[in-house]
Structures are given as C-alpha cells and as structure tokens.
Image (cartoon, rainbow, N blue to C red; front, side, top):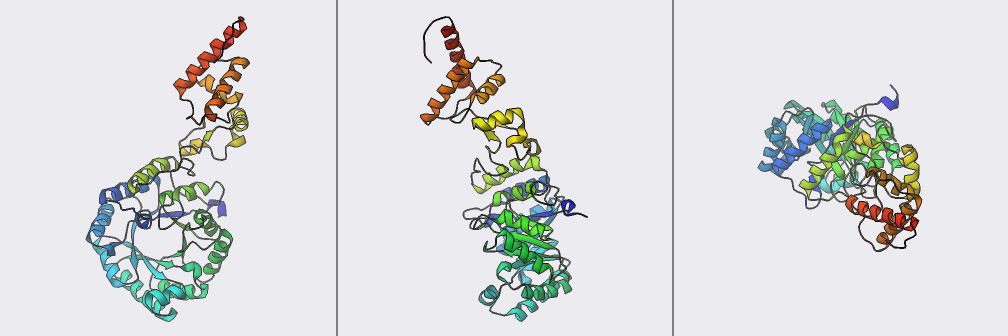
Length: 389
C-alpha cells in the first residue's frame, strides 16, 4: 500500500485536553453534544475526559458511553490503579494510561528512575487489561526522552497487552524535521502503532502532526479549533483537510461538517473563531484583491488552493479598497445589472473613498443603490448634463 493510501486515524481529545484550555469548562450536556458532533464528522476515537476528576466527570463520560456512538470512547488515566478503577465506573472499555517518558519528568513527578517507571507501567497496564480494558500508553514529554528509554518502557507495556503508544510533544518543543526524525527513531524501538500528540506553543502542532504521519505514525491526536492547554493542540480540521491535500494519508472525516462542529465547540468554550481561521473561518474563501478576483473569475484554480465545495462552502467577493473593475462587474452581474465602463469607474471610485474612510464594506442593498446612482450619472453625462455621485 502506498503512502497516499495510508489510513490515518483521528483521535480527538477536545473533551479532555481541549477542556484544559484556560477558562474552558464544558457542562455534561455540552460534552455530550460535542461528542455527538465529533462522531458525526467521523472521528475514530473520542477521549471523553479524566474520570479521576470525580463523580461529575464520571457521570458525564458515562452519558457519552451510553450514547452508543459509532466510534471508540476512551478516558485518560494516570499510571495508577485508582484512575483505572474510576474509568471502569464510567463504563469505559478503553483507556489512555499516561506516564512520563523523560528522565526529568520521571524524577520530578514520580521520584523514580527508568527501572521504576517501567515496573509501574507494567503493573498498571496489566491491571487494566485484567479488568477487561484495552490500553494505549501515553508518553508524556516524549520529545525530551531518550528513544531507548521509551523503547524499554514500551516493551514492558506491550508485553502486558498495550495496543498503541501516544508520543506526546508535551511542551511543544519540536519542529517538523525533528518530529520526523524522532518518530522514525521510536519506530525502531517498538512495533506498537504510534499516535502523535502535538502542542502548539510555537505554532507548529499541525505541521508536526503531519511530519509524524510522514514518519509512520498512524494516529493523530487532535482537538477542534486546536483548543487546549497554553497555545493549544493540533487542530482536527487542519490535520483532516491537509491529509490527502498537501500531505499523505486519508481519514474518514466528513469535511463538510467541520464548520458546524467548530461553531458548536467555540460556543461551548466561550471562544470566537477568527475570520481567517484555517478551514473553518468565515473569510477563508473571501476575495477582495482586484488582481486575484480578475483571475478567479476566469479560472478559480488561479487563486484557489482548496475547492470550497469540499468544505460545503463557496467563494465570495467583497467590494472594498482593493477591488477592481472585474469585481464590480461580477457583483453587478449578481444583481442582474450591467454597467458601462464609465459607470463602473464611478462606482469603483466611490468604493475606494468609502474604504479610505474606514467604513464597513457595502451591503448588497447599499451597493445596489450606488450602482443605480452611477447608472443615472452616466446617463446624464451622455446627454450632456453634469453631476456627481
């Protein structure tokens, strides 16, 4: 199978890592609505939360499990038996058991060494498997860990039945080149499928996720809108659309449903979606530049990297400072009006004056009135009358 045909699995953690964004707290009903939305767009796995947070979280996760969604529902656990028991109380059948991988975090957080953490991981994974759970091992701070240490810990986890390894760039330290090399190196240490979880501290989480996939990772850990701790995570919508477009691989994500899901998550999180936000922003298919519009009207491929139809969208032309005569003519055609060159120039002049005054772009009604005045002025001039707009 070629790289272009590789199936990439989308594991969404909006309800866990996304909710760890400052000031974000989803209600149980919001969590359920988001989970339904995630399942509807086609994610493969939903990390529904952290059962160890207590009764309310367990109940919220339980409601999602009870929904019977057509995707795997998992819970995040620390490497201890109590967290696994909490996941069981939520009705979960799959857990992501997280353990530090770097010697720094192993020493500071667990007060042990590689041997100690290996023993701990072996014990907890075996316990979870014995209770009927499928287990993925999450490697916190993997990007600062020695691949040989990761390999040793993973060897123990795999022997006890772990099915996947989540490589986490917890501090957002990697660039795409380092990510590629890191994943290639870890693959030499384990046969477990690799999931990449990237943080966006320097704006590279999506790029790093794509680099990890190029290096052989088969699972992408993402959140809607990149919501998450600090600068957030790799954005589900960006990774899903990039795969098969500018990167190798494919998913079962229904791209036409992404914008509606983004709106749902943004509302629940109390966050605004930037108008220029990739994939789901309001203005990503909006054009103003006269040079661009003139070419687009002849052949959309000239300035259109993504076909708007694949996202259930369409191109939009706004009339503002950088508009040209082609845009004016196109807008007039939408309104069923034809202007001669003189009237078109008059309209364009008024458009630029309005932009210079920093007023909002013309509404269709305002533009229609402007066009009508220009037509009348052009007619008056042709008959020898003076006038101005």
